[in-house]
Amino acid sequence: MNDALTRLAARVGLDEPRHAPLRYAFGLACARRVEHLLEEPQAAAGLAVLQAYVDGQADVQALADAARHLAVVANAHRGSNSIDGSAHAAVSATYATANALAGRALDAAGYAAYAAVYAYGGYAVSDPAAFEEEHAWQVRTLEALSERQK
Image 1 (cartoon, rainbow, N blue to C red):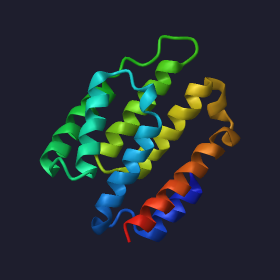
Image 2 (cartoon, rainbow, N blue to C red):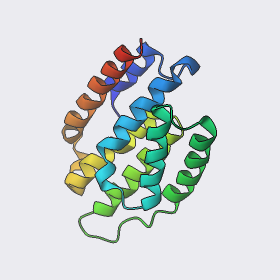
Image 3 (tube, rainbow, N blue to C red):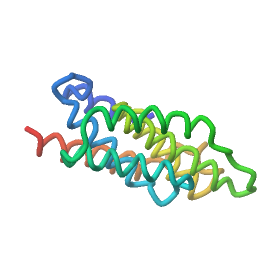
Image 4 (cartoon, rainbow, N blue to C red):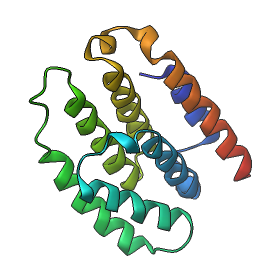
């Protein structure tokens, strides 16, 4: 858990309805950070819908449809049959994208951080220090996005 991000999200009112654009933009940024770990073409397609929504080129219905579809895709991900756990990172990246599409930015951030660290090495997820770089990036990113949207 990224305590600094949770505090910042509360301070900027990330969950307030008026900050939906910020939530989607931040969720998108987190999902883009682990986009290279996605294995499912449908997850990449969902990410494209989210990008279009954030850019004002897709409507809320397209976003909702993509969110519902990607939730199914994420829950059906085959998981990892590999020793190195790279598919576990793919599952987490897919969940990050699904949560970003659903407007659950902090959940997207959590899954994205887990995906990034797991991609480095499965053993690393039990070391809180392994998350520090990713957590710091998330805080900087939310700060920058919230400043731009003021």
